[in-house]
Amino acid sequence: PGDPDYSRCGCPNNPPARRRCPAQDDLWLTDQLPIRPSKEAVKRFIRRLEPRYDQVGFVSYSTRASRQGQGGYSELQCIRQEGRPCYEAVPPYTTPISFTRVLNAVEETQAGGNTNIADGMRRGLEILSTLPPHFGRPGAAHVMILMTDGVANRVDGLPSDCYAEDNWPYNTGNTTVDRAKDCVIYYADQAATSGVIIYTIGLGAAADVQLLRAVADRTGGAYFTANTPEQLDQIFDDILDRIFLRLVK
Image 1 (tube, rainbow, N blue to C red):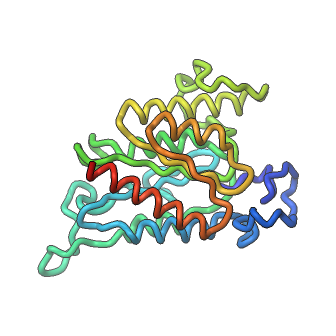
Image 2 (tube, rainbow, N blue to C red):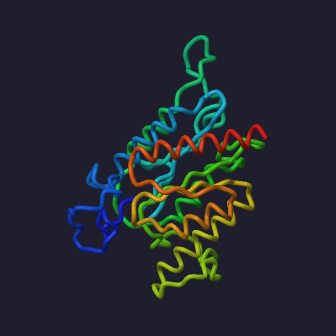
Image 3 (tube, rainbow, N blue to C red):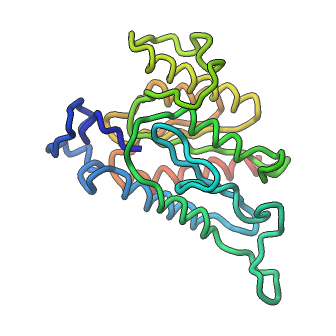
């Protein structure tokens, strides 16, 4: 999500200025915010999945995470959708449908607000749940891909349990930011306990590399940095390869 307190160089300013960034930050120059190239890369990744074998959902987040009935949100789709086999409703009723609903949720995502990473993680874990009203499959590999272009700075809607302890040891002196980072680690630990692997992607220079790397390490995933749209495609290829290797081992 776009953070209004930072320009595309990751420099604090208010209001955001159009600034010339270093060449390695090309991702931030291709659009008013990095949301457009990010969305297109995510959609290309989703189209590479196979509806007959894979499920995918989507949660966007800013000040809070998106929810059912809002734009930028989709429960797991395909194989089983809303508890039913995922086939076209036309004869012969055996053709798996595409991930259209998820692709629409990606397209509906808008930049803005703040960066409530933990709430996005919480909603993502809910979507992956095998318990009703969610549609995760028992025995399937449960994987979350977490993307951000900023620093965790909100705890709106989160239970106080997630920041009751100093889960993240590196305090900034800003209570809200420190709590936000505590909550990110809290939900990373929840993911690890549930067997959910999290791959993290930092978009541009303003992403919190240290925190994202910690999330990936705690869950058995990996951290990636994307400074250009082309790198995002390469990263998604790498993640697909890693998921496949886990499945065949």
